[in-house]
Image (tube, rainbow, N blue to C red; front, top):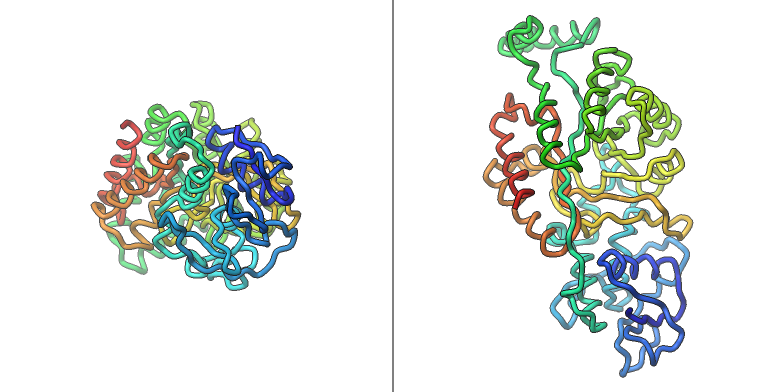
Length: 419
């Protein structure tokens, strides 16, 4: 049991210390006698204290526009400094709570916080910085790091944005898509459509047997289904199609964990998410408490509170679309900190390490370059702990079109889970 003295116990301090100790299977307690403490976290430190000097905002209940600078601790570990106070514990809170996202006024074209707005250097993104800072604090406190529990889970996840490329599409959607192919003179796609609809070849997006096989190897596999009303960015088959429903039911019956992929059009609308959640629950005949936002479109100050109010308990959107890495500085699941109410919620965030589209579309990496990136991310999680979560789509693992050859990257990732 590590004894910690603080000037005042605040929700922000508790949140940071829970991450440092409890998420690693270590026990701690706050005490009132600083001279009996193993760690002193204070704004007023004595030279004899086993100490970390506290940044002032850790005692606040307000959301301030902070301007952290980069600093290097005596150990050589980089962290943030707040008003010239080099504080790894405050750095943990600032990063884990996504504090900077609450005060950012400039969003990208989809209304998301973008990587370019972050105060953290890009090289930090590939590192689980909060875990590195936690180990810095534990070392200062005299904790034996061999006692730290770093084991985690290997969790493949799949988003179903477009269940099929051609099958089950009817009416205006079917003929509109065909017209586009004709206007583009895309003979290959027209021929493929013909062969799929005649039953001569499988639909290129029908990779659900592959997803089932992944589930058998890795029981924690999860699938997030887009069922929202059709729109410019929400283009899946109608959830009212009986064959579509049967497919979802079949996967659910096979034991695949189904979560909601709240639609692009649901952004900022609690009522729309509610309807989508209830609809998917009826299809699956089960409660749905897991989600991941379509286009990773969320706001930390509003989306999470809406999801929590609607009965969701687990969220899997914590990562960037434009770059691989650890947006909240860790691969460990952690509670969302509600900065508006200055309180620790019971809503769990599950960070992911990479997404398929990030590798090929945003970062423009080759297949071999992608494997190198993934290997490095996996090594980081293995060393510092947490769950290795990654995102693929049913349409990207079919080894066709622009994604020809990319299933090899998924297979490489899955091979890491067997090590």
